[in-house]
Amino acid sequence: MTTDAPALEVVDLVKHFPSKHKQVVHAVDGVSFTLARGEMLGLVGESGSGKSTVANCVLRLTKPTSGTIRLNGVDITSLSRRAMRPMRRNLHMVFQDPYSSLNPRMTCGDIVGEPVRLHGLARGRALDARVDTMFDTVGLRSELRFRYPHELSGGQRQRVGLARALILGPSVLVADEPVSALDVSVQAAILNLLRDLQRDMRFSCLFITHDLATVEFLCDRVAVMYLGEIVETAPRAELFKRPQHPYTQALLSAALVPDPVVQRTRRHVVLEGDPPSPLEPPSGCRFHTRCPLHAESAPQSDEENPELREFAPGHLVACHLVGRDRPAPRLVDNAADMVSPA
Image 1 (cartoon, helix red, strand yellow):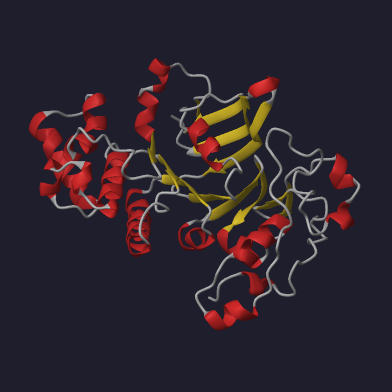
Image 2 (cartoon, helix red, strand yellow):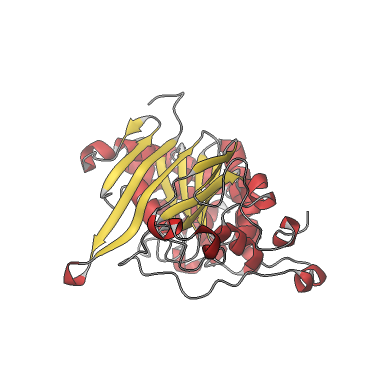
C-alpha cells in the first residue's frame, strides 16, 4: 500500500463482452480516472453507458479485457482470487437493490459481521460488539441484528448493506445507484447518512448514478459517460456552472428543478434518436449521431474520436469543438438555465 498514491486509479480500462455471431459488445472503451483519498467521484450517464461495468471491473467481479486498476498504488488488475482476497478489505460495494444483495437465510447481524469473520479479525463477543457498534453508526437499533432482511424496510436493509460494506473500514467504497430502488421519502435519509459516513470515516467513494441532483448534493468531482467512454470530467461546481460537452449540456438541461416557475421557463435540449448499439459503436466521436452541433464538427467528428483534453484546470472534455480558448457552443442561451437554482 502506497500512502501518497490515489485511493483508486483506473487507466485505459476496456471491457468487451462476446456476443452471438462473433460480435463484440463494447461496454467500456478506454476509461481512465483517479479517485483521491477522501474524495467522492460521481460517475453519471444514461442507462447502457457502461457505468456499472466500470464498477464491476474495479471490484474485480468482472475481469477487464485490458487496462490497469490500481488500489492504493497496488496493481490489482490481474491478481488471482487468493491474492485479491486481502485487498478486498480496502474495497467494498453498496449494491442497488437492498433486498437481493442480502442473504435471506442469514440474520442482519450475521450479514454485517460476515466480512470480519471471513478475514479472521474477530469472533465471539468481540465480533458481536463490533457489529453492534456498526449498527449504531448507520442508525439501526442493535436488536435488529437478530432480524432477517425480509423483516426490515427498504431503507433499513440499505443501512445493513452500508454497515456490511464499511465494517472493515475500507479505503474505497463503490456505490452503484444505492438509492434508486428506495422510496423518495427514504432516499434523502440514506444520502445524508452516506455523506456523514464519508466525512467521518474519510473513505473514497465512486458514486454511480443517473440522478444529477444527487451528484450535485454529494460529489466532489463528476465524470460523464456516454456509450462506454468518459466525455467530460470536472469539479462538481465547475461542471454544473460551465458544462462544455454537448452531451453534458443536454443531460443538465433535462434535469428537473424544484421551482415550477423556473422549470416552465427553462429551455430543454432534446436529443434525437436512441443511443447507438454497443455492438456497433459509431466511428469517430460516438456522440456525433445524436449531437445537435454535429454540423459544426463534421467531417472530423465522423472520422476521429476526440481525446479528453484540458479545457481548464481539472476540467477535461472530449469534443472537437472545445479547446482552451474555444468553449463549446451553447445549446441554451444561459448556463444558469441548465442547473437548479442555488
